[in-house]
Amino acid sequence: MELSEEYLSKLERYIESWVVEKSRSVLENVVELYEDFRRGDDLPEELVKTFQLHLHPVIYNSTKILSFTTSKEWAVRDPYSIWEQGGTGLDEVLVKYGLLDEGETAEAKKRARIQSLLRELGELKELLSGMRYPSRTWIHGVLLRIHIQDPLLDEILHLIERVTMGELSWDEYVNSASRLVEDLTTKYREIEKQNS
Image (cartoon, rainbow, N blue to C red; front, side, top):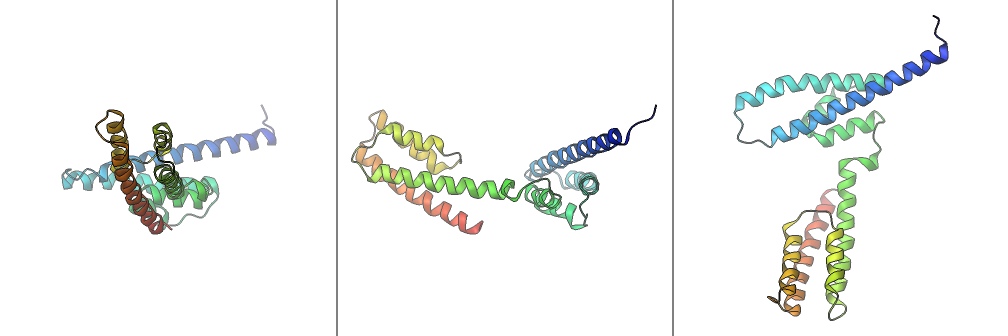
């Protein structure tokens, strides 16, 4: 049985895309594992060293496979970027190999979340300082659109629940929530500057 050039070409492209998919998946999962492991401050030092000893070749060889299958130049720096920076380093490598757009990186997504948060805080500020009694439903709606976990946001929600339960007057809520919104805005503008 003789295979046509067209069939072999399709097979080659399929195998390359499969290898890219699997190598990328290995790196993404290893980076998640590595970052979880690094957060385990109470782990014995010997275990950490053993883990690093076995994990490093996985990252090293996976970047070589990805480089080869994407026809991008591999550099010694590639695995070390991942090793030193975790997910941020992986994003850099994936961008370099043409597997991730700049706008899809974790850093770009974080900047977009912060910009969205600042817009929502601006809307919340308007609701609190505009009409005398803005609808709690509108405020809840704004707060529910914010997808960043922050104790100050939790406090704003807690305060509005206290208004609902009659434990706090509306004016007290507006004063407290306004201060919290200002604190949040200041905090996230500073984070935005640091990430620029």
